[in-house]
Each structure stands twice: as structure tokens, then as C-alpha cells.
Amino acid sequence: MKVLVPVKRVVDANVKVRVNADNTAVDTANLKMAINPFCEIAVEEAVRLKEAGVVSEIVVATVGPKAAQEQLRTAMALGADRGIHVETDDSYCALSIAKILNAIQTNEQAELIILGKQSIDGDNNQTGQMLAALAKLPQATFASEVSVADGAVSVTREIDGGLQTIKMPLPAVITADLRLNEPRYAKLPNIMKAKRKPLDTVSVDSLGVTLGEHQKVISVTPPAERQAGVMVGSVEELADKLKNEAKVI
Amino acid sequence: MTTLVIAEHDNQSLKADTAKVVACAQAIGADVDVLVVGANCAAAASEAAKLNGVSKVLVADASAYAHGLADNLGELISGIGADYSHILASASSLGKDVLPRVAALLDVAQLSEVVEVKSDDTFVRPVYAGNAMETVQSLDAKKVMTVRSSAFDAVASDGNAELVTLDTVIESQVSFESQSLTESERPELGNAAVIVSGGRALASSENFAILEALADKLGGALGASRAAVDAGFVPNDLQVGQTGKIVAPDLYIAVGISGAIQHLAGMKDSKVIVAINKDPEAPIFQVADYGLEADLFDAIPALTKLV
Image (cartoon, each protein chain N blue to C red):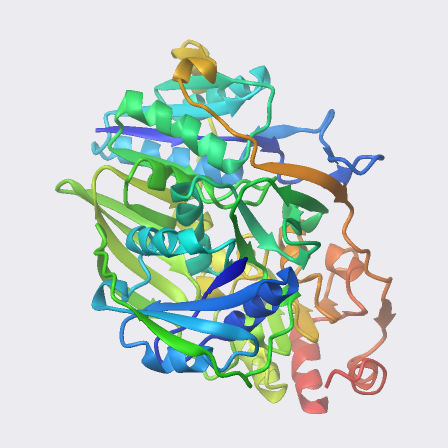
């Protein structure tokens, strides 16, 4: 069984970003970039399914600039078999990304598609669901446990208030939540090996998708700053401030 | 121009989120209809009909809709959506699951976690864990968006909307297996006036009892950082943060939480923030209105006695 794992290049989760001077975008120049943490969890899950003998091939795909090949190599160092790079310097909304991925899925016919539930830059949480809708596939978002058996996949999902388990026929789309697994660290020999794994570069046009303009960013501004607070010296002082100054209890 | 709001409910009653999303819908300025989709959801529908300013409540009541599965709900809502200019849902696990499917089926983009309405096509939403606020204009004919309910005040329940029954039943390709929901007498995280949240420093599931005692005394909810949930101290649905619950209570007490940016993203809009931590360098102190450098195992029982 083949699994497709779309991944995204984002600013590293430990970097605190700033808005640029003319308030048009977040300044990402010279920042450390990485594979989106949720995408890494998705790759790890695919690798575990391969190690368990359920999956035979893992294809990773990304849409982004030339440098995004680094993230495909990272995924291949973790255990993915080959990469597809849709090279573009344009930035697209989730719907357009989903259309591109749907074109890849039409070619690849993967039985399982695993994505991260959201990217930590746009915080959209849309791509997997949109891809599932376009490909007319069932979906299980926010997965914390996945098991494949007899042509179906059972997924435990993290929902408001607790957990839900659903079962889907394959092919299907899954989006990974934080607690699905803890991704491994790539070992040096695997990083070397990943450099020789096949990586196809294609253009958006060659996939035959037509993309529209859906949104326009008017401005990007820093969030409202909180006023500096005070340190209190004791529990008694804290209780007093909460009762008499903030009046919240 | 009419806005459709997807209700959040458990069939018996409407969740507070719905009244907040209706407030966002009213800020857009169009008429507002509400869709209640569920199984045996008449009670929730009649509550929705009382929401201020709602014209119609559409009710899709069928066993196929019992478990809020995304594929058939997406198809149902995108069908109904043909008649609407805006389709809104809470940025809850249900809204996040279903609405992007609706948008894709309608061939429009989606705006996630809207916190402010600028006009009927321009909205503000946080990106990068709330470290930047993006003002976005939608160029699509229909606007599909999830709403961060903590950014809006609930509308009153003094209305009397017309109830309209929908007969469309669409089956899901997915089969529901099981569900385990956390039973709690405490208010829901998204709706609590006070939240007491614990982090890794709590060190065990049992130690959360001291936070529960404080939360109960204040009539508040219990929350947690990702570290505490990952360590298995508390269930996943208590996680506050960028990818967990986003909350904005009157009082947020962060106990033994260092304050990673991902956690701050979930609580920094709280009105008053208290941080109690042993480490004076913990970043949580930078957003706190009141900071107390102390051992939580001494401070929390003492605070519980004083409030």
C-alpha cells in the first residue's frame, strides 16, 4: 500500500517571528526554517506503518520554493522513499494547495494520505480537509491513534471534550495531531542516504490545475501588547490584589 | 445577503459558542439564519430559535448526523450554502473538521479563527500563534469562515426565530466506533470566567487535585499546558494553546507553566493573568498581570484558603 504525505516548509517552531516595518507581512528573511512539526508527525506515522509492514511505499510532496527540497530530504531521512517537489515562488491559500495535492493524488493513487493538522505559520487547519473533499475521500482529522486492517483504517481523534474513534474505508485522508507519535531523529547514515533518493521537480502548470485568486492580505500587524505586570511578594498579597485591585474574585 | 451559522450543540442543548458566532454574524451586517444538524436535536433547535436577531433556524434531524462526521455534513452544508453569502462556524473541533470541506466543495477559500469583522468581506485573524494579526479581504463570492468564539460576546436569548425542517439525509462513508467524553461538573474551558491551568511542574496526575480544589472554589475550569497533557497528567481536551483550546477568561491562573509561545497563543487575551512559578526567568511572567515566584505546592493550597 502506498501512502502520500504532503509536507510544508515553515519558520522553525522555536523562532519568535516579527512583523516587517511596512506591516505587509511577517519578516521571514534569514530565519531558521524547518519541516512543519505536524507534517513531521505525519511522516513518522507513515514510516511506522511501513515498519509494521502495512505500507510499502511512502511518497512525500511539497509545494514551495527551491529551498523546500530541504524539507523533502528531511522527510526522506526519516524514512520516506521518494519526493515530489512542486516548485513555485508564489504563495497559495489552502484551497489552491489542496487542488495541487489532489492533482498529485490523481497521479499517485495513494491508498492513504496523511498530513499535519495545521501549519504553524498560517494556522489555517484546512488543507487535509479540503484535499479530502476535492478527492471525494473520507477524512479523520486530529488523529491521535491510527490502525490499518482489512482495507479500512480506524482513527482515534482528539475532539472538544474528549476522544472519538471512527473507521473509514481506504483510500482516506488523515490529519495528525500532536500526540499521534513522537518523531524520531534522523540518523547520519539515513541523512546521507536520503540525498540519493529520487526527487521529482514539477511545475504547477504541468499538473494541469487552474488556480484562482481567493484572498488578498491587506495588512499584517503585531498583536496588542499586554501592559507589564507586577511581581507580588506573597500569596496574601496576590489574593488581596485579585480581590481589591483586579476585582476578579 | 444572508449569513448561515452552523450551531454547536449536543442535541439537548446549544453550546455557548453558537451565541458568540451569531454575534460575529451580526457584525457582518446581514440577516442571520442558524443551522442545527444532529439527531434528536429538537431541544437544541428551540434554544437556537431564541438567539437574538436570528431569522430562521434550519433543522436537519437524522440519525446519519448523530456523530458530527465531516463528509456528509460537508455535503449537506455546502448544498444549503448555495443560498447564503457567508457561512460561519465556531473554530471548535467540529467547525475545523467540517468547514474546510464545505469551502472546497463550494470552490472558495476559508478564513480560519476570525477575531474581528472589518466589513462584509474583510476580516482579522491571527497567524504564527498570534504573533501577527492578518487583515484579509476575501475575493470569493461566498465567505466561509471559522470564528474564534472567545473574541465575541454572546448575543442574548430573547428572540423568536422560525423553525424550518430540512428533509435531506446524506449518509456518511465513515462509521462511528466509539466516543469517550470527559465528564466534569466544572464549566467548559471555552466558557469559563476563571481558568486554573497546570503545567509540567505539577509532576503527576494526582497533584492536579490541588488545582482542582482552587478551580472549584473559584467556580472555574481546569486547563493544562501541552507538557502536562503529553505527560498524561490530564486528558487532551484540557490543553490550552495554539493547537489546543484558545481561551480568554476574566482570570487565568497559570501554575507551573513556563510559557512557551504556543501556550501563550492560547491564553494571552485573558483579562487578568496570574503566573505562579518557581523559576523567576519563566517567560510566563512577561505576560502576567500578577506574578508570584513560589513553590506551587505551598502557594496553591494557601491561595485556595484565602479566596
